[in-house]
Image 1 (cartoon, rainbow, N blue to C red):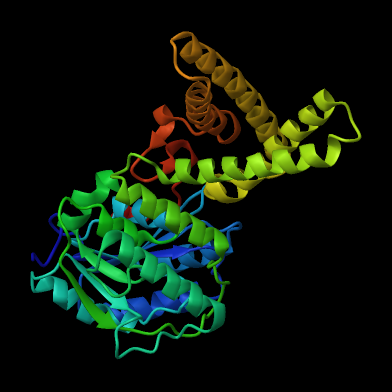
Image 2 (image 1 turned 90 degrees about the vertical axis):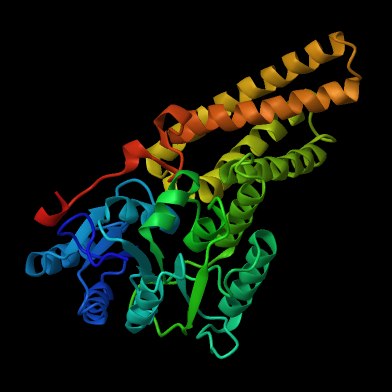
Length: 390
């Protein structure tokens, strides 16, 4: 592997993703710089924080050290898409990622990079689940992580004992190969990187354990698990079922339950047409709120934008009902059995609702998207890039 990238650029590009990590980021930058001493490197902080406190600390550090760069994103969140945004502006031949909360043992960077330099691997992973490792996880985080690891290995195969690791390095060649197929969904970027190649990657591992968090809060929750399942479905189907659509369809299925529960509660006391109308509207509101929380969490709407999004969502779904009816009628007239026609109409309507509601409520449309990154381009903002980045 060449010692430098693109002429006089750095060999190593380490992306550090932050979300409200102002308490930890200064120490993380200092430790990362010490771990990479002796390499030609750059540190790229991709910040999705709600305020400027983390970014200001990074800007100050960047004025002292031009190897520190900042990518400030606005109106969009998500660790996986943040990693991709950082790698897209990176100049190194070895591309790494770690969190900004101080939990990762960045001192292991030299060993991981050395394994890649040897030319025998595409990805070098700091694994928490090797037999000789104590993970550093406790309680429900340990349970959820082990469940996610097991599910990921079942869906995408072996390769590594820790497909959910947040600290790893890869060669630029591997990244450029998988880049067009990365979904950028959720928090588990390594699963995306492992499963998006045209061949199985060659992986090496170094044992690690998570340390105490220096700042910020854990992002591991049930939503992250749902995103992981949707991501695995997308990878197993070769991208034919996008992860967002899987989550959207799941929310839609829950809406059927909400509809029936509301109808059962009101049908005995109200005229059926009125009870049905209330049930439909309730299901739509429930679907919108869950999609805003889960499916489009990285683009979630707040305040007045949330009310406008709800109105757009309801109108889009109302048009979907009309589409379902027209398709079902057309199928029946073509001698398709009534039940099959109804199912066909429902399927077409679900696709229509996904496309139209995504556009109407969250501004997501295929023409506006960087599909591989899973992030609407218009929501990405760049700030604080030093002279070295230009």
